[in-house]
Image 1 (cartoon, helix red, strand yellow):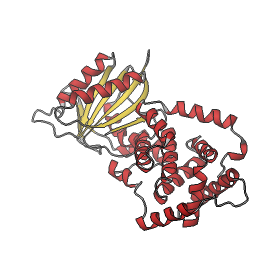
Image 2: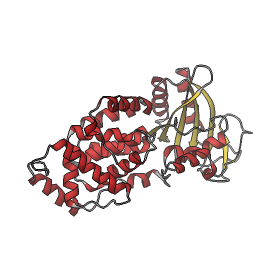
Image 3: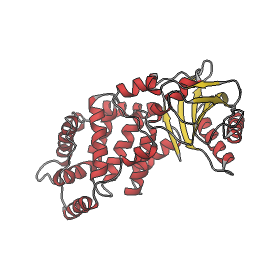
Length: 349
């Protein structure tokens, strides 16, 4: 399983392996286990921080395939350097050397084939204060991790109001749907409703107004969704123009509107039946992608594919995610849409 995330909004010190390891949970949004985290670097000249990829450590026999896949992903997205961090994967041997050395050697070799230089290769059994870490290349390299909560990444992420979860599974559970009875009842209501719920009104402005009202409630901390609200919001998000307006709420990513909107999309992803839930899941994925949380974006897109396998925007975003398209490229598209889009379908909290 792969998690990719850009770190352009949360800078870390790539020259200090201990600080880099401590920042990992805040860059990914969760504490990884049995993972390799690859920090991409871009040049020429003084290298700049690029994308970060997290993948599960491969089982025996698949090390070479995993190494090649990671190397190709970095190469096609314009990276010229990398720092490698293994979290978990076993314990150090009696000489203090870290585990999974064979895989790391293969990964370094695969990166070298694409002329991607490796700055550091480091290991820690887990990310926590005073845990002993080490290096793959130098036996004398290592020490004790600082408290991750004191890292710059922690301050930036926490200050922006984002939560760092204890595990990837904990993030996955955020998307778990509400009770099956509730979803079945709402699916039945949507099936029996042949026309939009806004009788006599232009559906696009009415849909925007519906979403605006829900955003205002979400911004005020009210996340309860009634059956009537669920049906109305499902209809609203099914309109291409309304969904386009919803996409614009993701920028700027640190705005109150963006935070309220992303909270609403997650709530609706749980509260709506399939296939309607796919619309909310795609909006959640898009918002997470834009703010640099590709771990959450990938999870949301996977759920969207389950809810509606043919969803076009979900497929487009999945392609961008797999190709490691930088979030800044998405933001440029959004800004162009904001400049060109009709004001009457722009959302305001």
